[in-house]
Length: 237
Image (cartoon, rainbow, N blue to C red):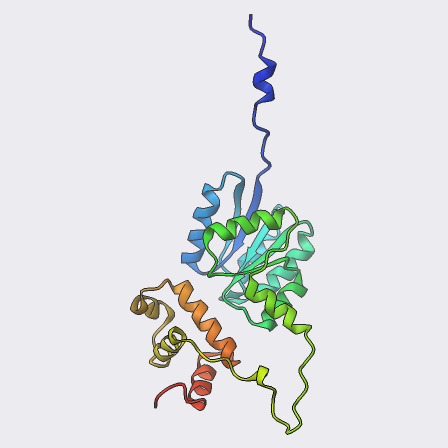
């Protein structure tokens, strides 16, 4: 008797619709790590890779994908341009920023351009893959530190005290011992990769320290950070 058993059919696993993902990322180390993570994820398919703003815009001439990961700091321009173009050309695509930039300006501009998720590169590969799934299913994953900055934008400004001084809540945030160590090495001219080797850390972790230092000092460049740190007496010399 060659009839197929209906019991076996009932227990067959339902087909999973794969999530097609494209990446616009110029950091080769991080990009390779993302590619490896996507290739082993059974429910994901790598649909395209770009390493620059121009290549990212060229991707948009192809078939739309489900999720587009975009780095903001591209060698030939801002990833925000790619986000804005993707929102127009691929309206059904969910866009997630994956970057080292965690300042309020980049956050708000990315969201206004069409990003639905915002993760910093210090997130683990497993977490990013999980957040891609969340984004594809309608969620808006966002790193906690980014969420705090977005919420802070809508927080009322604290009034100035009677003597004209700023309230205590606006006092500069102190740097941790590790942040001071990173800042000291930055001042001596070491790159993020060199600092990572000296401190036995990943360069993603070092860049996270750098981002936190910039946020605490309220600066946006290495030169400004060194100047501000010396002005506050955080560095010798």
